[in-house]
Length: 239
Image (cartoon, rainbow, N blue to C red):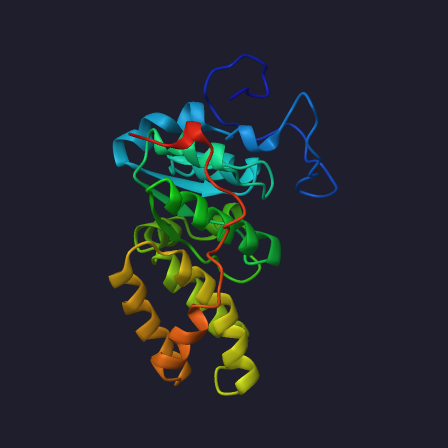
């Protein structure tokens, strides 16, 4: 990290100016720079990540800077919401578990969904933190640092994360709501490799929707696994 004095001293200081405009300006990849090949702050976070065997993954650089400053020393960031197999492979060298901590907006949820499949495909345990409505990770930790860290420790498995999100956005009492919830959750279930885990979660989904398990099993067979279009590169396969 470079301070406002210029030299690299590993410290974090308040900037000497307050920029105006958007928090991030996402750019497209170029031949010289591909966002999916980098994880911001991994150089500083890898020691604590290896110690805890878990990493906290956020969406942007400012989120990572603020969380690191607030004591979350195992935080790394993607470049925008472009989460790639190469980034997951890099994390796999230091962590067994990834806590995905993205915004509630559609892009953040979609990036989390993609990360689910990639991380599970690399053999990682994955949990997700659903932030308070309207809060970015940096805002959440500054508002309640202790509460934020507690949320990291109690982050639910990804199935529970997606189920909670879907139930909050759709009305499970209506046929349309049941269909919308099932459409989001069943591809997640189809992505699970463990049959026992899949059966247990499908039973839970049936209870929440008040739908017979047999009906959900039939629909599950028609679904494609989440993120099936992107497999891990050979370099990501760990022994």
